[in-house]
Image (cartoon, rainbow, N blue to C red):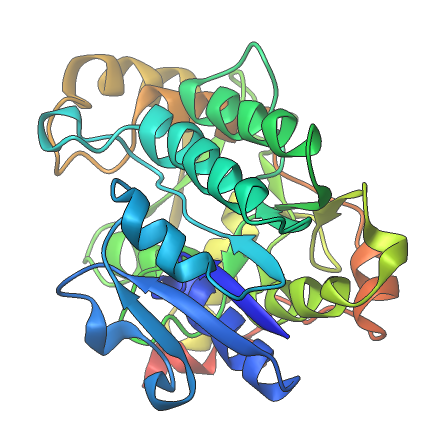
Length: 305
């Protein structure tokens, strides 16, 4: 099977390419100029130069394909650079979906996110609208992962970001919580390993029972922000004191400073953090045929590399 992959040079995309090749699928990957070295096993892929604003590049990527995987997403907008949630997470999905439908491709796998909704933050709304758009015309499977971790191969993911922002600096780490009581307002997440996410996609490709379904992908534990920080610290042999931080105070700081590119979080990210990000691991375990990998030092060894 030839599979058109949009987002194949990103963190999750690199694992999708490996998983597709391991299952004897041929990835046809749209590669933005300058990102050629980010394509895993390029010699075994069909790489098409271009970007999501080029219909000719999209058409070339889809040519001869039997299915589409769309896994492009951003965590932060940079409107002055033309990078917005609406363009990357909705309009580009529309362009790819319209082109795929014109070529008679019926199978579409979409990377969404846990907690998407409308109304919601711009991030949540654009992901949700993209889901609704592809559901109209395709044999679609939607994946909504919680926070994804795993060796980023030089990119950034949740554990490497925690290490860089909170463990490495000679200052206390921050433990976010809702309200004003840290024992009652814990922020919970279900970190899920990137290999499990990629395996879920590839398994679903050939499984007709996944058509029309939406999968929330979560690891085996619901962890607080502070628990995740402690585990990252242990993985690199560090002890870290954690300073409880009300999300309300951080939200106030973001209201004043999140226009600065170097400010670590935006108001919308804090709003979504306060909502929590957990998922029952049962569906993922059933799909991949084994228990999901845990967010533990053994699976965080890449942080010491």
